[in-house]
Image (cartoon, rainbow, N blue to C red; front, side, top):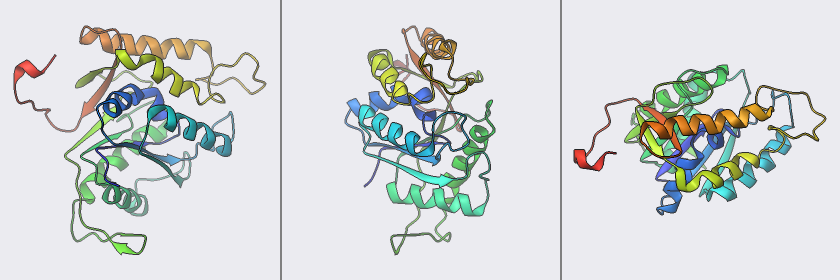
Length: 238
């Protein structure tokens, strides 16, 4: 299956928290979008990998994804090395996306910046014809996405691009709430974490309003880009 957009996420729920409004907007336009989670989030304080998988599957249906898979890398301990790069290269060549979106270039969680650089490196390597990868017994051809974006997570990063997600705000929140083990639940007996407080959900909305304010809409999602963005005309920009 060829995808228009492929999103990489170090953990299940990274994409929902940071770019699910953009995913919903693109799916509404008929684009094929997929998410590849790098780890099962097994080092997280709350929930289990099995529960996180069920939550990811639920969120995938809400977002209308064409595909979602999990590479099973070691949470916290995966590395940006040859073995991990080649696994992402295989996935990129398998789905041949025009656009790739990855984790924040630096962030509170060490996996986010690591995942961002791994994504960047793999997108370049995937375009090298002499780098060989095999998928389902078939040798793959080279493929390099046209552009790589990075979403913004806990730490503030000045965006290069902001997408208006106002029409999709409620659906974005529904996708986030699919990960019920991770976020605020007054009935939960699990330990409190950075993201399980009610204030964290308030932060998610405040960040979206901050990004939206930058382009004079109610809600937005911000991205950084690895090259200068282009346009056919100034009039096409907000």
